[in-house]
Image (tube, rainbow, N blue to C red; front, side):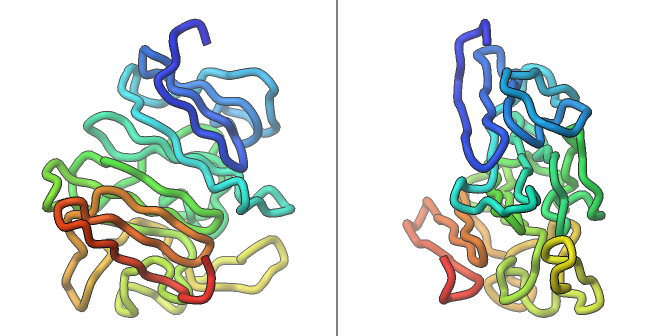
Length: 220
């Protein structure tokens, strides 16, 4: 990168960097450069809003799958929605289908508010969106078993299923973002950011110092 760097993200794949001019560069697998395969060199990522990139998120390095289905990336941009690309098993890109993406595409969040942060696991993702700190909403998508998305039973369609891995068992999944709830029709508001495990999630409510968690209790 010829410009000075602002931030870097390294997980399963790829490794991404945000240059000082807020444009994106990646190397590894699942690059978002219009083709499959990997690269040992930093490649510029196209189809992201020019000069507005804030950061990347990839699944954590400990969450790699043997078949490469964890190769996905989501990015946040200033005053806009998240953009995701790469492997889309179980709909974890939030793009309303299970087709892989070779270029970044914007994720439609229900409220038209900028995304403040995004988190990505090997099977699901979440985003915190909103202009005001105390009224942010959190949405999640992807594998929906065991309460991993925090959207409540009413938010899960039992007929919508996805293969957990090629040739693997079918699990319920959510192909588009849906709000995390604290009760029926009670959205969880005011989170600052979310951290995801393989089958769980937790979020920090900065104004109160409270931490909210959901998902499978016996898996990190």
